[in-house]
Image 1 (tube, rainbow, N blue to C red):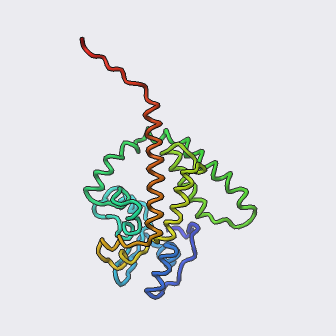
Image 2 (tube, rainbow, N blue to C red):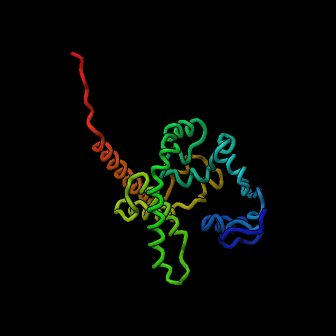
Image 3 (cartoon, rainbow, N blue to C red):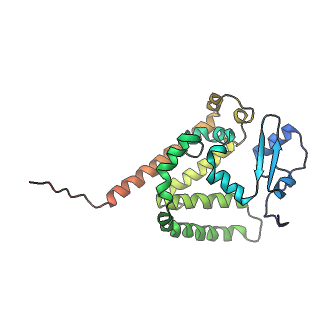
Length: 241
């Protein structure tokens, strides 16, 4: 591999205690990893209750994410962290349920349809650059927040035809940030392989934020569906005499 490593958070020491690793993982997934993992094509990382693998090889990443999903199911950690927000959606499901959900949404990712939304993506990129220029002012800028905002802006422009500055879109983004703070990626139910029903015991603030996000997304989806229906030309039925 090349000695050039892209910018990333400072890595932790090679050896830390189990509980130190848990605390680091909850705070920042990337900063919780030792330096050696970033220099390997693939590396195994063991903890008392589970093992994980760090993959850098592009061909293997493609195999895991695209070519062989049955042998590389989504982690219980991801499912546990997003359960109250996403339920049994395509982002957390595996197996036949995931395949059925993918067949439903696949037409939206066809080549021609993607080309149609490129202008919206470009607009989001220009808007992000313009918004960051006065914020930087020669000082260090928290890029994670800005990149998250850009990703959300792309989603809202392509799915709902509204920018992130729209009140509803802004509400979803801000509530999702609150959700991340109250429901960290690493949670006990996932980390210790506890029963699935343990995911139901979440903080009241997490459930409240999830409900707000789902309500806002439902409103955006309903509004968008109504606009599309109104934009369609009326159907004229010809009956045989």
